[in-house]
Image 1 (cartoon, rainbow, N blue to C red):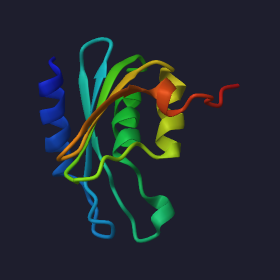
Image 2: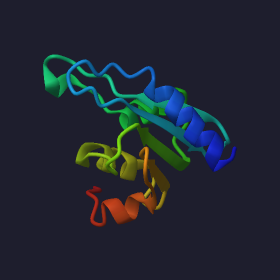
Image 3: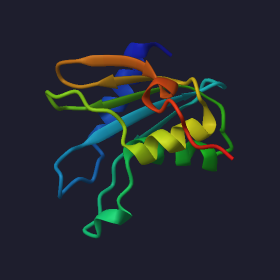
Image 4: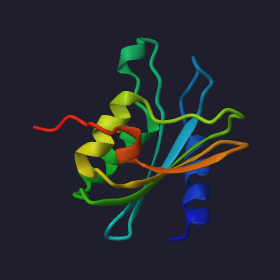
Length: 125
């Protein structure tokens, strides 16, 4: 699975986003260490606290299928401005990997980083 393939899958996933309030459609492609790819999109709710981000959607799908070891995540949104995962998503990602590669893709920029760089002092018991 190439980086280009993962970006394409994340873009496709963003098309499924349910974002009637923010209009900010996000898609994710999550590559597991076993080679499977799980996609996710954001799902909003009029009671905003009940919304779910694309990153957590992909992780929860993978975990519900028994996958808990992740290699790489690509996050995509068709926006000119570069963005990063929210704090809740960073914490959930770090639960499963403190060094997972994360590529963030906007219409004009690409940022390659790790969850450790995005959340340097994550919470763990």
